[in-house]
Amino acid sequence: MVNIKAKGFENLAQLQEHLAELEEESPADEQVPEASPSPQEQIAELRRELAQLEARLVPIHAKTEGLDVPSRRDVHLWLRIVIAAATTLVLARVVQHFRPGAPGAAIVPLLTARRDGRI
Image (cartoon, rainbow, N blue to C red; front, side):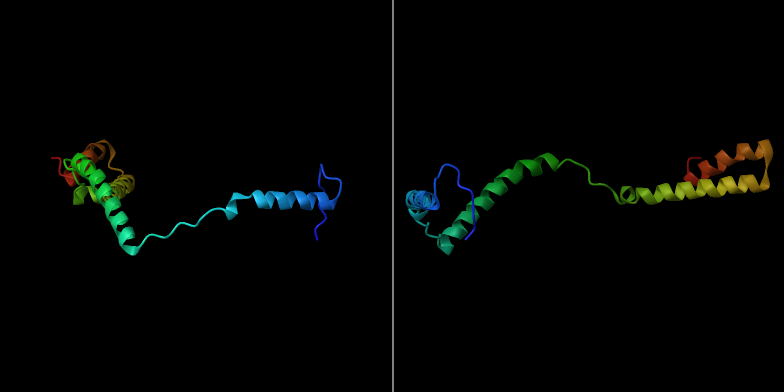
């Protein structure tokens, strides 16, 4: 048996008597277990919940109906960014290697614009 300090009790017998009284007053013994619902009742409850969820979904669907879906072009935006950065890096290396001077510095923006199809 575990030796515990019982404040307010003079001996172990008083403590055990007190605990016995608490057990007798415990409402846990008086609780009647609920009967589990039948499968038909469970299915009916699930159908009610589904109807409630569908009712909540209708306004959400109405709000999002007019929103644009991202196009295939927008989905791969990161790829376009990488290609643009790589092209800029290559052009910078070409300009450094050939050192075209002032005329070459004027041509680089035209080449970049032509590659992007802006001209």
